[in-house]
Amino acid sequence: NPSTAPDVTFTITPAPVTITASTPTAITYGTPIPEITYTTDPVLTATDWVTAPTCAVYTSSDTSFSTPLTGTIDTGTYVTHCSAEVSANYAATYTDGSLTITPADTTTVITCPAAITYTGSPLTPCTSDVTGPGLTTTGTITYTNNTNAGTATATAQWAGDSNHNPSTATQSTFTITPADTTTVLICPFTVTYTGSPLTPCTSDVTGPGLTTTTATINYTNNTDVGTATATAAWAGDS
Image (cartoon, rainbow, N blue to C red; front, side, top):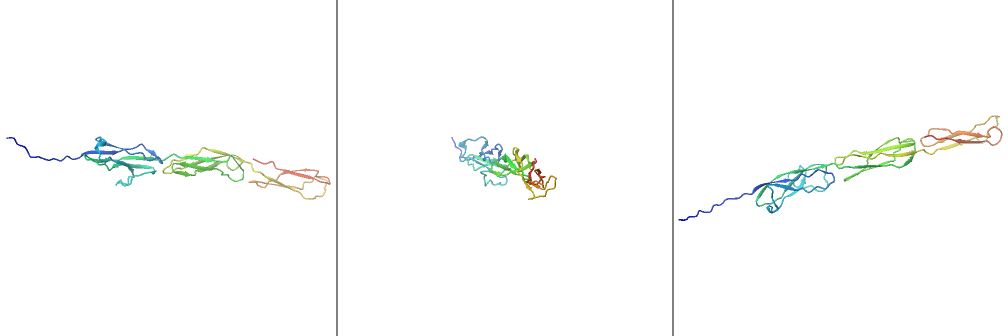
């Protein structure tokens, strides 16, 4: 006679799937964090998920992946990780990726006046600005030939920091022009006739950085009784 076996049950368990977070190309400091994607092994489609995985960037110390990073983050190497997937037919394990952030380039600019007057002391009239992502600061300026009249040179550089590369400004020049001087002539009100040319006057020349200097004095009508005239002039220097 015919017969039928009793029903027997068996369990279908979820198949394993490995979810691997992407490793984007390195970015520079100040660049927005790129989208982190994932791949699966075996390859799954959208219909295999109840909730698809979400992926983000984390510090290596955030082993619980509790605080995804956003905005501008410092240079270094970070972990990319995916989680929060829900699938009726698959059980996930995770493989992390990484994201490297490198220092950003900076620009150093030096600004100098076209000319400045000699003072006798080293002149430092230039300014320097350094800019970059999240950066506004000043550079270190170095001068050469910046005391005496002539062409002075200035260079500026910035050493960089953990998030920014160093940079150097294009060399700039400025002219140091000669300073004005003052020549003073001092003569007595009267002097007695001697029969010889009389030279009773003195002259002092003053100016920035100028040591005690005298001018050349020229006389006219300075022998006989009457009115004599004296003039003083200094030819200047470099």
